[in-house]
Length: 109
Image (spheres, helix red, strand yellow):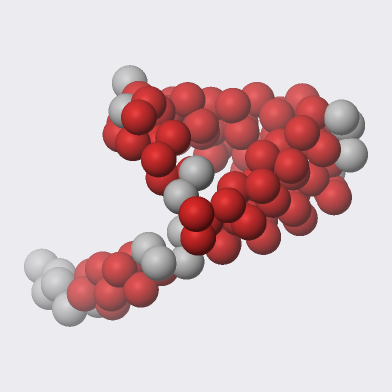
């Protein structure tokens, strides 16, 4: 259920951006993404991830951007969310890039 919610959340975010920052689709995508994250790793671990002391700046930007999107200012809200997302998940980027680099070494039939 969690992976599906995250997938639909990312789909609605992408679709909202493609439709010239439609605020309803962006807000729905954000809510689906966050609820999927809760389903995947649990409520307590999600709460502790977002509210760690070094990540409070990224969390405030991410949730502030979510509030701004809900207030119907989608471009500014998505910029704030993007900055918050990058600052929250910057420790995961080397792992992701390493995994994507190892995919290039898989031989094709």
